[in-house]
Image (tube, rainbow, N blue to C red; front, side, top):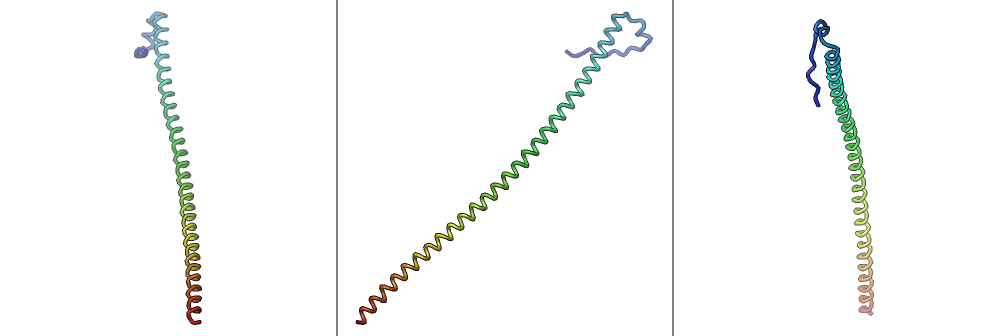
Length: 117
C-alpha cells in the first residue's frame, strides 16, 4: 500500500494539533522517508546487479574468444595432419609405381636378353 502524501505542517500549526494527529503526521513522514530510502536501495541493487551481469558477460565473452582460439589451433593442427598424411600416401604411391616400373624394366631386359640368344 502506498503511503499518503506527506503533509508539511509548519511548527506553529503543529502546536494546534492533538497528540494523536502529531503522532500520525510523524508516522506518515517517517513512512515517506522509508519509502524513499527503499526506492533508493532498490535502484542501487538493480544497478549493482547490472554491473555484475556486465562483468559475467565480459567473462563469458573472453571464455568464448579463448575457445575460438583453441578451435582455430586444433583445426590448424588437423589440417597439417591431413596434409602430412596426403604427402605420405603420395610418397608411398610413388615408391610403388617406381617398383612396378623397375619390375617391368627387368622383364623387358630379360626378354631382350633371351631374344638375343
